[in-house]
Amino acid sequence: MFEENDFVCRHMRMTKAEIIKVIREKNITSFDDLQDETDVATICGSCVADIEEILEEEIAKRDA
Ligand code: FES
Image (cartoon, rainbow, N blue to C red; front, side):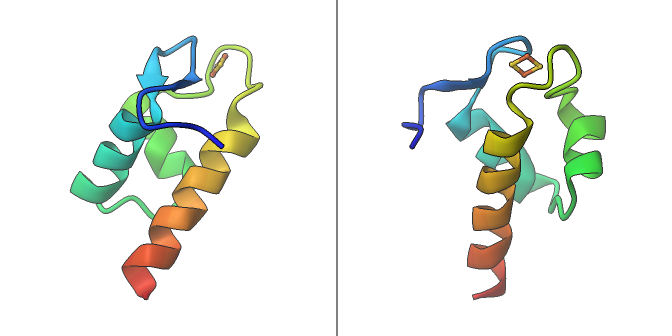
């Protein structure tokens, strides 16, 4: 599990908190949209699964 201030995508230097902020502010619903906004996971891709998990959690909260 990541803490808010942990880098999830270290190539784009994005923390969990920063990723969540973009997801909420831009009302992101897909990984592609998140990538368009932030360029996360565009270098090595090792962060994809972790970012997908954060995105899914946020979407689930939104739909709750
Ligand atoms: S850690 Fe996200 S692209 Fe490398």
